[in-house]
Length: 590
Image (cartoon, rainbow, N blue to C red; front, side):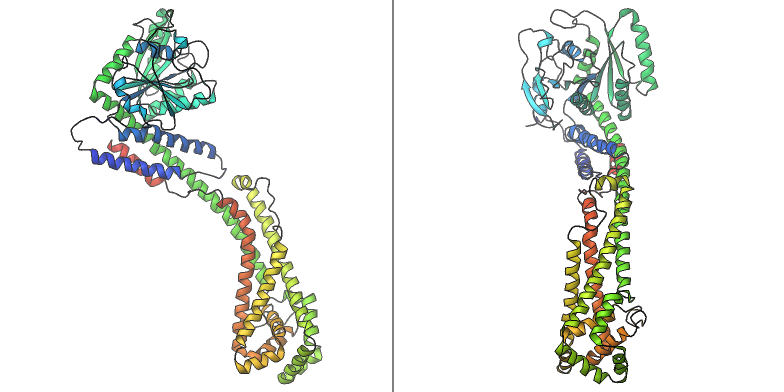
């Protein structure tokens, strides 16, 4: 349970509640942004999301919720800079492990005054780290044996140590090396520094110009964080020269306000401790800061304000990355829509220009309706035509079925060919795109899916059966029923298919071209049974149903590609720009 101190009502409490709500909304939006496509720079943007979420969880939200909590001073720096030795000197007791073996600090150790313990026992700060409660030995021991035992498997825990020599109102956190040989240690050091109210950055006379520390110091400058720089192990004869040079570097990099402390090179005692006064200046500065509530509040608000400004800029960068992802997603989807849409258009075009009435279909239809002399008889007397076809049906129904089968085979071939072309084109366009290439991987989608030929055949047969149902429904009237029963459902269905596959101008005309008078015969037959208007309605409905059938088949094939995109979507599409604006406004009001 968090310790609650008594204080006068805060007139800004409502503003703080609103600020926390703004931050929580921004965090929720950011957490829903995954950037799943492998675009250039996507890895860096994902790291930026992860780091920003950690900054919100580890520092910004906890600090806004508890502005009066003790300051957290993270002691960080390069390998061998003497961080742990410095922490022991500040406390005046070997509380954290120091020595020559690297890395000495595997588990971060948080030192606090015993009366501040309640602020750190829960998950208020650094909620992703476990808590290990430790006590300091009352018996003196070498610094090389102090603190938690190095445990490479426990870097995800925070060791809490209460000691009365730590000033109340401030806590010291001994962090791993920022340039550690351990990846986990480097990652954790960065996480801890991002959770700090102030940095105590330790470097040496030999390494103060190294690149790694300065990258972190420049990050501190960008966040306006309070920094104390400790120049450790400085030979007495070089102190003035090194101090002056480092101070000039800090000014050039926008860190002129940083406190600079020098710890001279000296011999450690038998316990591995610095002389009592070696870090007295830094110790006094920390004690004064801890004792001054207004100063502590100023440090916390300044760091907090800088952190919010920094993440507002990150939100803009991540929003731009998310927009690139959306554009790439649309481009990949457009490739699917374009290619399969074009395939559908070509299929439908092939079903209305008479092309399907060539070859086998035409031969079976002519077998069904008879010879050219019969066509002339039809033109002269539709009644005799009806009688002849009726007798033909009663004697031999098989030819009508052969027409249906020939149409099924021809239509299936067109659908298979166009579906394969579309798949090949989409595969080619996706593989030319980094995101599409990553989505496809080793999968070969440049062809129709297994079993598509059987599904296409079944769909065509279902469409043909639907046509038969249309004819039965249209023939429900007594007079019409007598007519269509005399011709047979299959015969009328075959005629309707021929009419549908001969349409070149909607329902306003029929092409008499490659099929000769074939379509006219089919149309005259249907009109003799149902009437001209009914035939138009039947043909229109049949074509609409065919369109739907082909669309569903191609949608299923297109879905193989789209499923890869849909499977990577996880809450993306959230617009982060409004949240970035709100965060900038919040930082400006702090």
